[in-house]
Figure 1 (cartoon, one colour):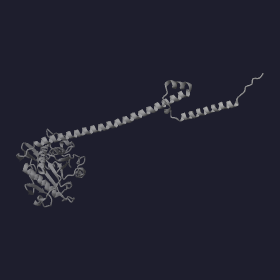
Figure 2 (cartoon, helix red, strand yellow; figure 1 turned 45 degrees about the horizontal axis):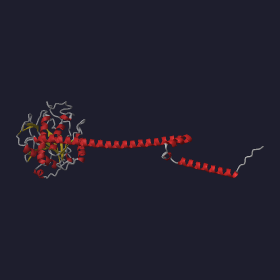
Figure 3 (cartoon, one colour; figure 1 turned 180 degrees about the horizontal axis):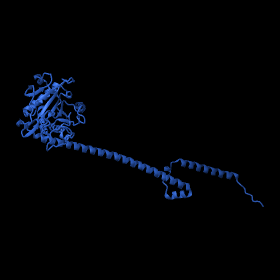
Figure 4 (cartoon, one colour; figure 1 turned 90 degrees about the horizontal axis):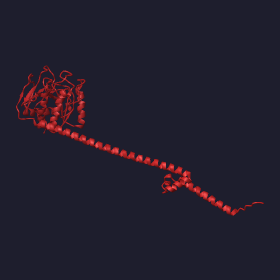
Amino acid sequence: MFNVTIINIKKSTKHILILVIILVVIYVITKSLAHIKTSKILQINLSEKLVQCLNEEIPVMASTYYKANNIIKEDNEKEEAEEENLISKILSIELEQIQKIEVAENDNETDENNNNENKEISSEINQEVATNVTTEIVTQNPIKESYNIELNGVKIKNETSFEINETILEKQLEINKENIIIFHTHTCESYTPSEQYPYQQTGNFRTTDLNYTVSRVGDELSNYLLGYGFNAIHDKTYHDYPAYSGSYDRSLKTVENILQTNPSDIIIDLHRDAIGSKSNYDPSVKIGEDVAAQLMFVVGTNGGGLNHPNWQENLKFAIDVQQKANEMYPGLFKPMIVRNSRYNQHLGKAATIIEVGSTGNTLEQCITSMKYLSKVLDELLH
């Protein structure tokens, strides 16, 4: 006996075709899902139960979900880290800017405080300067005065072949009175040590300690002038150390550099008079109760062959200052000297050397001189 199975080909073909279509659809959907970003898949609002079901029925889904979740987490962490870094950088920049502003404000406050303190100190000092006082030359070891010209009471020792006469006084000076430059060709020149200003000499009446040299005198003059409203620029560069030779060449460069940013005609090279034959020579004048070192102008010309077209203006300025000093404090200045050397005075229309005292004077006496010299300059120039 035979079992016979009858197959309906038409119906079977239909089922197979449906199955193939289903498989194709599933394949297309699977491909489409593969091209969709994992982040998009996970953005579908699936319930935990559905996700659990899918994970159980289709294990690959769990793996994919896990990997995608980690990828997104990593991306989010990177984004958060980048944002934190960016915020941190912004905060750092802002903090840095704030700190810079605070530092600048503090610096400005410090500068303003320092300037105010200097002005207050200078103002207090300037208030002490008397004008209607008696004066008397009190040099203990005097040297006979030597001069060969006198113009309006100003005594001049002319060591050149130029004729110096009344025509010098007729010159009209048009000078910058706001800026005054003070420097020292011989920065290390010092004085007789005293109880108040003792120092260790590093040469014959010389020291590299600028607290005890003519540079300290320059500090005093600068402070007084600042108090009177002048813009005083005081340079304390060493020009005679370690080598004395070439001092004027070095100081020339210094002043030229200063003039680039501070145009000026009044240029004072502050010195101490040379030792000469008497190291205890102390030219001094008593002004009221003060004992001050006497001062002396040294004016250069083009007699040495160097170009110096404005030496007569320099001489006129020195005469004007000394004439005013003779009115206010007779004896403050000794006779001035006019020489052939140029002394870098071609740099200004009112450039000159001022010798403050000599080796026999003390630093106290020279500092006192600046109180009265600054007062003379204030009266003349304002």
